[in-house]
Length: 155
Image (cartoon, rainbow, N blue to C red; front, side, top):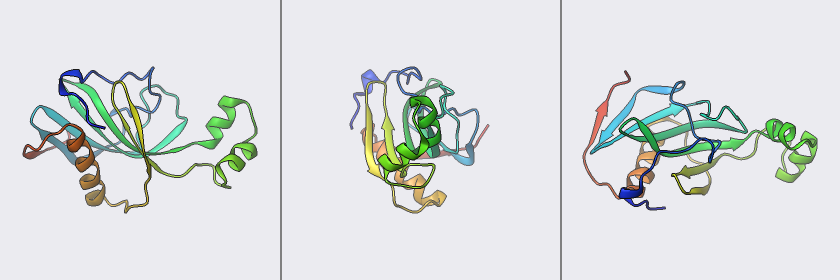
């Protein structure tokens, strides 16, 4: 997904239930500035909507003027929450997902104001350096931005 820079509207938690909240989980020393964009890496954040139908392991958000305009999550469906939400048994959902786990597989999902793009299952390493590079490559490519990355510090 490449987004039109002039159409970068804030993400709406009523549209996408999996938008991470930066109130919890910002990783210390993993905040960056690129041009007018502020990027923050989050670990195990809650969602803005309060509907935790997914478990977000890691996320990187992009902000402009204090508003989140992009979110890239490594998320997995919480099958227990889906079971309660849909009113069916956990076992049925586990059968649909072909798992005995309480979670679906870990997926990389990119959110913009208008689009949600599931980029497929994530099988890479989970260390901070690998994740930072992975997230930044996708997000800066999405923004078509090749400017210098400046490290910020968590406030």
